[in-house]
Image (cartoon, rainbow, N blue to C red; front, side):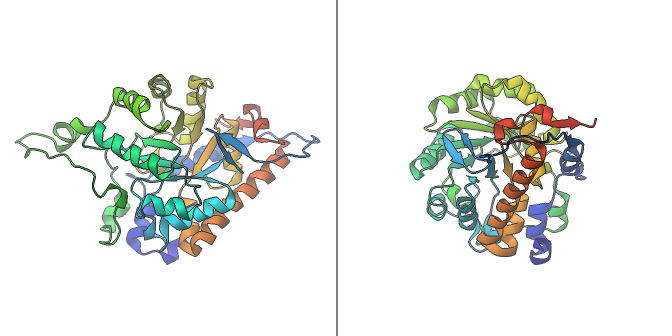
Length: 348
């Protein structure tokens, strides 16, 4: 329904993938390769899906993933999504590329948009910390530093659709962010390696941010166990396993396939979350069984937003929670803590 209602450009921006779409498809196939091993005749009375995550109470282990420029999908954009998350007791991560001022989103969601997603600012540490300070002053409780997209992936659908942001859709929370000035390229130089690379962060920068930021720092976009270990050493409060929904580097494994090794590496030092490819409540169950503390939902919430605004996004979140409850009952799990690795079986 959303695909029928969206213009070709916004649809390409929302649903498109990097390259040939191998990773986007792998994200779905990865869940299909996991089967559930149910237990029967267990006492399920008093069960539920509620969790505590970084001192936040959620009715289910779900957060809305950070998605940019949501006014492309509905007039109220991020405000409608915040209302939907609040209605369902889900978390929300607001993108720093939100088309709506962060304070308005906080107000619409009654303070429920508790995490703020950010990229390392090209102007360096001071600019990055300033954005973090603004998020803290606005009422957010954590910073989600996305590290897997230092540059955009090659997105064929957007290129084919000649997608450009409309003039009235901008990253309003970054309007005054300073930008670096690059010297003209010399013959044989690369824009990425000889200019952009000088602005990209490293693990020392992450450790600096963890030490100086006014809020706990969560790193999003980890796919390697080695990087997960470096994140813990740097002082992050949580790790999010993600391949950006297949939108950045094509040809990497499914996020759900990368999850178990990261969980094993972290060994409970910090919560591990995941996103990319979740479409059903049974997918959430599988991610939890493989060690995720919670999951982030992206495109499905936006599809609901397109179709019916805040109510549509809320409906998607409620369906996923209902499906998770059904899966838990049929698998013999009374609480989220009961969903362990022996609840699933990997086909491959």
